Image (cartoon, rainbow, N blue to C red; front, side, top):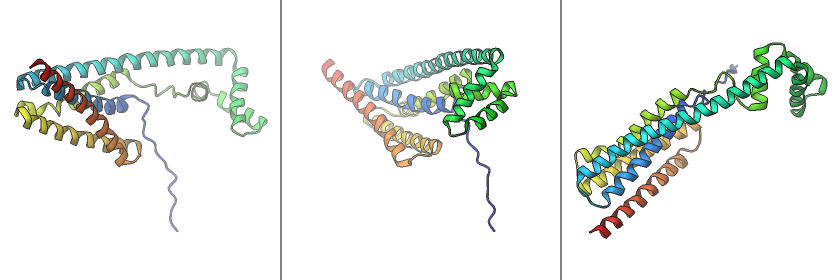
Length: 235
């Protein structure tokens, strides 16, 4: 008789670093391939494109890292304040908090007596009580608020990587060949990001890849067109 496997593990996706990594490499690619092709569309010298790409890579990576740090730090501080308030209420009014928790269980289908009994069990341990109320009322896990430092570092590295890939051809090539090579390598990275996203989220690979290609391609095409128009006008 086949043995049933009851273990079901979930990945921790609440820490912020994984999310920051995905957004970082995607943002780095879209931003810098758009910048590089936008400048290249005006047909300047290759050194101008390299300079613009390097500036965009550094500025984009540090900007995204700073944004991740500030936003996650603010979110963590807000949640920590709410947890402090909840901890205080649990100490001051445990019976009120127990009734609130019982009401939550009642709304989920338990009878009033069973709901109140279960709420009492949860309230018997202060840490369990805090975690339960935080999950039910705030929708967060007190032990998984995320690390602003990890998210910022992840964003910095992955955004720089995403921005570097479309820039590499310009260290070896120039002109139309460099532009075509940039489009190819950027497209391959966009496909890789789409595949990674589909694995990470469990959603359709085709849709994830198509979406990433559409976003990257549209941004690059628009900026290249603007660069070409500016180049023609400047000439």
